[in-house]
Image 1 (cartoon, rainbow, N blue to C red):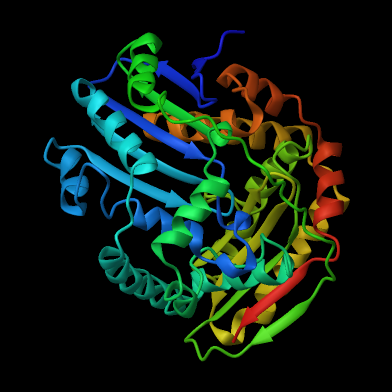
Image 2: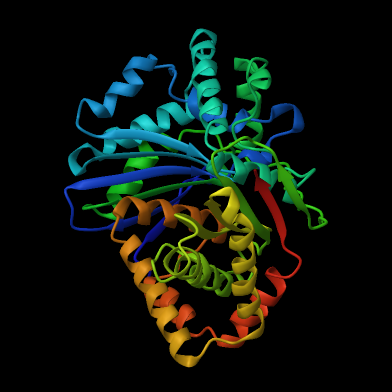
Length: 406
């Protein structure tokens, strides 16, 4: 079955994918397979710092010119860093697509990282770190990951520390990029109302001259961990809690049943089991959700809620009851069919965002060197069985870990 995306490869190893759609707006991104898990212990926070530093000036532009290049045309340039990738992305009118490609190439391959600009950006990131510290609903996720992936590259948070940021220089950023941002670990993804040939020509014009490079290191898988139950005093107005466990890597065939299971338990819909139980039936929590984050070779399942201090124990008890139910009682044919249809509809709706579709396809091609069509993805969901859901629940929801902010 033909994919919605067509692919190409530049001579230096950068892979490209493009989808032609009817729209006046174009989106593109350079997805780099390098994130915080690729940092050495002496580099924690470097991937995120580098992402910020990309906007601070190039061989051809000052920082102000980088920021204004697309904005003056009504478009936008942005970036983000995760545990495993760094993405530079832009949105413009279709007629300005080549300008977006040129700008992304300029900041990705020709940034100069001037020290005077880095000094200012350290203060910006320090403020970002403080913002997280002031938000227990976000901080608890970092703390939980740090504990569940303890002593591994996946464990430390993406932002790093203020003390570490003050040590990083232009030379260290250049060294980090040279080691991790290799052309064999890059995908240029685009979507817009023009042909793949047009997208490829733009990529060739601005990126083909970059020397080919190959990654010289491999990622280490996190060691097994001992489940824990930890309560930390944070003097918050509410109790914040995460209950979770390690999951499956992005290439594991059990990833899809786990994703469906997580959606059933605490997905974004109002009819998730936890939302019905904790919020609608008992009125105990305004915010209750379950998430599954797959990494290359591992994963994380996390159930988060916040509540009044006096309701926390009851919330935890109800969550464990729902987890036990999913472990021991297979879904009925009707419940499974409803869950599949809901999951597929959510996937379809998310793909209505061309930008989101483009970014997701770029990450998929980066990891798998392939992209499922929507029909292929739907078929895989529809083929899932109740026993697969139960088996995954038994494995992931047994011996879970727990972190509470009191």
